Every structure is written in structure tokens, then in C-alpha cells.
Length: 411
Ligand code: GDD
Ligand code: GTP
Image (tube, helix red, strand yellow):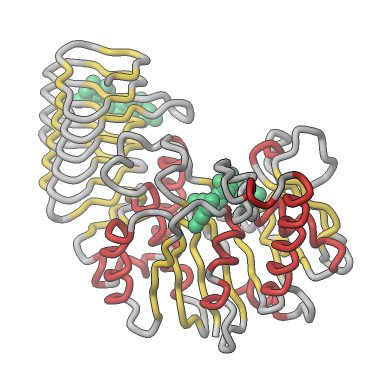
């Protein structure tokens, strides 16, 4: 069968989503009403012959376990497990560690997804393409670049147009690369990949041994020098191009195509907009028991039915209102997320913002960011006074804001 793997990283990683990640791992942040990585679970669950889905990461077991239990309850025919790494080993280091889980006898292929992306790519078509390639150990999902700057943000790929083999790969290069595709962070691996992992590991270890004596190597703390570290992009893909076993799937970009990384608050609102639009077209996901509390309105608005919203409030586009939220008269909200238990009093205005759990906005208050540039974030339990305006700010938890603030990080 097919196995799905979602790499979720760990708490050491970027905290661009602070202050929401202190109490909860970033991959569990709700986007379009469900955990970011739930969107991956849903897409994987729709594949023919998927038998297992693994999350691999460095978050403590107890932070992920509730999520695993929820997935198990919803998809009874799929086996879910969290593979916990004690230390940072890099994207391929973690695959190497759990090789026996991933590439067992019953594995036809493994579909590997970076947890910090959102997309509507048809994974079944990707798998079908991979199946037509007889000797592919790894097929990389790639897309057209959007602008030249992409090259510093993503892996850059050049393929052989006839054979679809990878001919050149550079991870986030500084220099100009002519016509390239970008790496979407979705891969299909076949059991052959296991051998490539072993080879890459050996090559890396012998080159490390040339640089450092063995007794020193055990003690090096920088993950890049550590002999357990293995980067999928730099140590595995780039170094195995000559094997001819690495292929590229250029993802067809139809009209509603979207793909985005989800690393910053801007990304969160962008991903939410795309995902809500997708839901407009395909409401299937919301019919499951898991989502029975959600009301999906037109104009990309999603409201939990356990919230109380005044009739005169004007909400949307691109707004999600989570459970237990109270919204008063004449409130206007757009391009925002209102998290559980918040209270928004009459005539307040919210745009381009994420309002944290159990926050409270007073009468006639304004909380706003700048479209496509800056998201205003209120952490958990923040109170904004009546008629107070907060623009382009990040506010950590449990603050009381009684005057106006602009462009500030408020601790
Ligand atoms: N389990 C585990 N262990 N996960 C990890 C580790 C690790 O040691 N290191 C990173 N990850 C996870 C991250 O949480 C993320 O989901 C994914 O692996 C990739 O993260 P990075 O290694 O930080 O790379 P990136 O996101 O900057 O770039 C990668 O993704 C781009 C597409 O989004 C590269 O693959 C690029 O080439 C690609 O374009
Ligand atoms: P878009 O940005 O495209 O929606 O254009 P718009 O002209 O509708 O502007 P905006 O979305 O900012 O305003 C939408 C509604 O919100 C209008 O009816 C405004 O009167 C109202 N609005 C603007 N500021 C406030 C405010 O501070 N409080 C309240 N309650 N409503 C406001």
C-alpha cells in the first residue's frame, strides 16, 4: 500500500507564529477551521490504497497525541502514528531513522509532505505519474516559479524535458539560475529510495570524517556538523542526481491552483483564503462528523455554530470565527481569524488580524493590519479598551491595552 508522511519539525523552528506557538505546536494552528496539518491528512486519506499516515517531528508526544487520536477516530481504515525524534536530524535524517517503518515489505510508495505548506494539488495524479516511471526512487513535485525572488526561498529544479529526470538541483541559491521550477515540498518515494538514503548517509559520514576526527564528531553540537544530520535537499537529492533515479513531476497549474508555504502570519491568512475558496467548490470535508459544528457561509466565511453573532455584524471575506466567540452589534470583520472564546463588543472593526484565544475588544475599538504586508496579532487573553485602535502590532498574551498603538511589538 501507500504510506503518507508529514514532516512537522519541532519547537526549535521559526517562531513567526508567536505568540500562538507557546501553548501549541505551530502545525496544529487552525487554518480554515482545522489544524494546518489536518488539511494534509484529509488529502492523504482520499488516496486509493493508503494504509498508514505518519507524522514525524520533535514536538513532545503529549502535544501531538490528541491529534493522532482524533485522526484515528475519523479514519478507521488508516493507521496513524507519531514518530518522535529526540534530536534534530534534518529532513532526511528523520527518514533514515524511521526507514524500517516507512520502507517495509508492504510499501508500494511513500508520499512525503512538508507540514508547513498548504495546496490543492491532486495527489492521486501525482502518484499515477510516479507509477509510470520504472526506476524512480524519488519523484519531486515541482511548480513554475512565480518570480525570480523565489530562488532564494525554495529549492530550484531543472529537469530533462524528455525523460523527466532531474538534471540540476540547488537549494535556495544566491545566484541566478535560468528557467527553473521550484520544489513544492511534496515527494513520492519508492522502496528504492531506502538504498539512496544509505548511500547518502555513507557519503556524508566519510566526508565528515575527513574534516574531523571521530572522537570529536560525537561531540559536535551544531546539527550541520553532527553525524546524525542528513538534509534531504543537500545530502540526498543533490548528490544522487547522477543515479538517474530522481525524477520531477511538474504539477499542472489549472485555474484554481494554489500552493503556499505557511510560515508567517501573512501566509496563514493567505492559506486560509485559498482553503476557504476551495471549500466553496468542494464542501465534502465539512460533512464529516469532525466538522459538524461549522457553518460555511458564502464569501469565504466559516463560523462555528457555538458562537453568538449579532445579525447586524458584517463578516467577510476570508474570516473564520472559532467556537465560543461573542460578536456584538455593527461589528465589521474581514481577512481575519477570531480564536476560541473571544468577545468582540459592539461596533468594533477588525481587519488583517488574528485575535487570540479569550481576548476581548471593547466598544468601537479597531484592530487592523495592512493587507498583504502585516498582520496584527493579539495573543491569548489580551484586552483592548473601548475606542482604542491597534495597528500593525504583535501583542503577547494577557495585556490590557488602554491607549492606541501603531507598529509595535508589545510584550
Ligand atoms: N521531523 C522533522 N525533523 N521535520 C523537519 C526537520 C527535522 O529535523 N527539519 C525540518 N523539518 C520539517 C519542517 O517542519 C518543514 O515542514 C519541512 O520539514 C521543511 O522545512 P525546512 O527544512 O526548514 O525547509 P524549508 O521549508 O525552508 O524549504 C523546504 O520546503 C520548500 C517548500 O516549502 C525545501 O524543501 C525547499 O526546497 C522547498 O522549496
Ligand atoms: P473593502 O475594503 O473592499 O471592504 O472596502 P470598504 O469601502 O467596504 O471598506 P471597509 O471594508 O473598510 O469597510 C466596510 C464597512 O465597515 C463599511 O460599512 C464601513 O463603514 C465599516 N467600518 C469602517 N470602519 C469601521 C469601524 O471602525 N467600526 C465599524 N463598526 N465599522 C467600520
